[in-house]
Amino acid sequence: MAIPCGHRPDNRTARALVSNLNRTEEIMGNHAVARVSELPPGARKIIELEGRSIGVFNIKGAYYALRNTCPHQGAPLCSGAIKGTLKSEKPQTYEIVKEGEILVCPWHCWEFDITTGGSVFNPHRMRVRSYEVTVEPEEDDPSVETYPVSVESGFIVVHI
Ligand code: FES
Image 1 (cartoon, protein in one colour):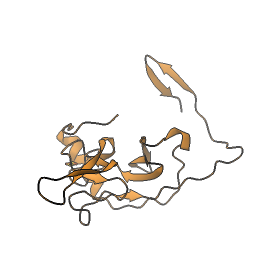
Image 2 (cartoon, protein in one colour):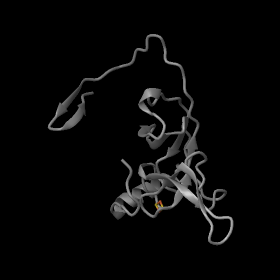
Image 3 (spheres, rainbow, N blue to C red):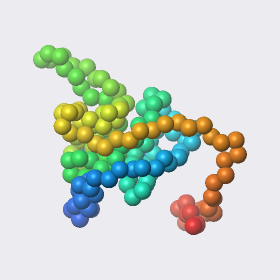
């Protein structure tokens, strides 16, 4: 569920997120994060990979992955609303473009293009980290480790 712009957690959480933002690290591995059927066009999934929170998006059938940290003050960017943005060629005329491709930060409403990671207002200087996403064929007999799951008092609980 998208968090509306203007929601902001306490300062301690914000400082921790900004601290994470300042680290420069690379993700080296390949990770299967969802089946194609789990992420239809317009859907997103926020996951943890190697200590990073990352949002994976299906935008009109193409997949994109962004760091879930806003470059402004560290908000959980990938939980923001997905919209279009306004484009204006001359005064008093505008059009909505890139509908369904613009991610709006839930804290201060900075807008980012999900397809590039660039900000709408200054795409060459302000970006959110993005990652390559591919679709790989499923194995004939995929065998993965499974864990028991139960429902307890309205919560889905994974038992590891
Ligand atoms: S934290 Fe300020 S716009 Fe994202």
